[in-house]
Length: 171
Image (cartoon, rainbow, N blue to C red; front, side, top):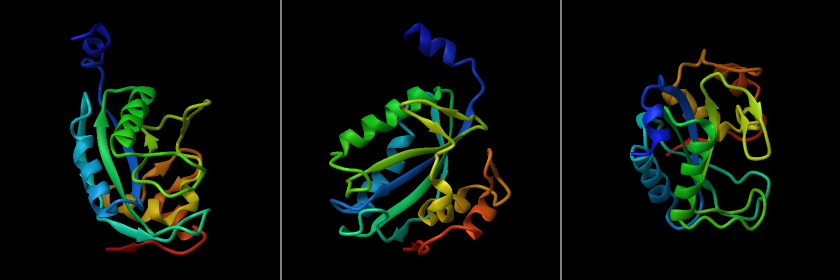
C-alpha cells in the first residue's frame, strides 16, 4: 500500500453526494452499474442511492431522455482523488465528450463534498448548477434530508421549490 493511502485511512470519512446520469447505451443499466461500482472505489462506502428518475435533456434538446440517480457515499478520498475515480468510471463506460450538455453513456458529478466550498479549473464544490436541475434535486431527496444545507445555496427542499424547468419523474 502506498504512503498516501496509509495516511488516508486515518482520516474521518466525509459525506459526499454524487449525481449519476445516462441517456445512451441502455441508460438504466449504465446508471445501476455505476451505482454498484461506487462501492469499489478505494476508501469509499456507498451508504445509499436514490430511485431512478427520467428527465428530459437539458441544454442540447435533440437527444434522448436521461435516467438519473444520486448516491450518498462516505469517503476518505480528497475531492480531486474522488473526481479522478469518477472520471475513470465514466471512461470505463465509454464516455465521450463531444460538446457541452450532449448525449453520454455516463455522467458522474460531485454534488457536494462535506461542507467544502472550492473552485478551480477542474472542480467546483458544491456543484455550481445543481439548483437548476430537478433531475438532481428530486433523487437527492431520496438519500438526504430535505433540510440538508447546500453551502451558500440553502436546503435541498428550498432549491427544489425554486427549481425552473420540467420536473424529473420517477421510473
